[in-house]
Amino acid sequence: MKIAGIDLADDKFPQHVGIIMDGNGRWASERGYSRQRGHNAGMQALKDFLNLLEKTPVHIATLFCFSKENWKRSQDELDGLFQLLRQFYRSEFPTLKKRKVHVLHSGDYAGLPPDVVRIFETMQKETRDNKGKVLNLAMNYSGRDELMRAARRLLLQGGSPEDINEEVLAALLDHPELGDIDLVIRTSGEQRLSNFSLWQSAYAELYFTNIYWPDFSDKDFAEAILAYQGRERRFGAAGEPRESEMLRA
Ligand code: FPP
Image (cartoon, rainbow, N blue to C red):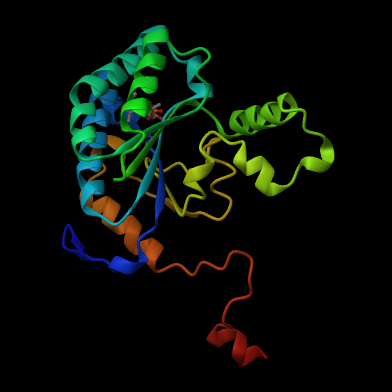
């Protein structure tokens, strides 16, 4: 398929994409706007991305909306972000339902405003039989926290040290059914995971772009997919020797 004029191989799309939507604040401050205006623009970029997602073979999108570390921000900014989630529920959820999207939440409910928790519960309940795309919203989420909560679940089930293996631990994550992330995209020029989906990203291809999230367009997504399609994924196995290595041998 073609996205924004870029040719992409239909059979080599990632199944599960994770996005660290970073740079709303810098996008705003470079324009002399409030941080909230940056987040509002970020919400528009998110809506545009969901429209694009619908047309691609990508099946699952995990979006980092709010991390455990984000509580350090001002109360005003926190209120604004939760307000955006409420708006998202009112304006976007009906469309997602029509599209048969399965909406999920990853992260810790503890600490979130009670009505925000109810919104996530409602979105999950009302879409749980949907067989379309999967939209996993990570809110009050961090990768280490998810692993810690998985370990707690194991202990609460009466697990003992010899019960632990990768499969057991993976099954106790927030949404084990989603499996690994194939491609992580981070916007705004930062080149780190910042505690995003640590377990699920163990073998993910990482793609960093300098574009701020509010400016992230179909073309930027197409460029990320193009880069992914050019990568060789080996999952720890030996690859085909490169020409330079054959010359040395
Ligand atoms: C990072 O930019 C972005 C966030 C912490 C929030 C992401 C939120 C959205 C994309 C809007 C959609 C929101 C919801 C709730 C669905 P930053 O503020 O860290 O930017 P900076 O690093 O430039 O300051």
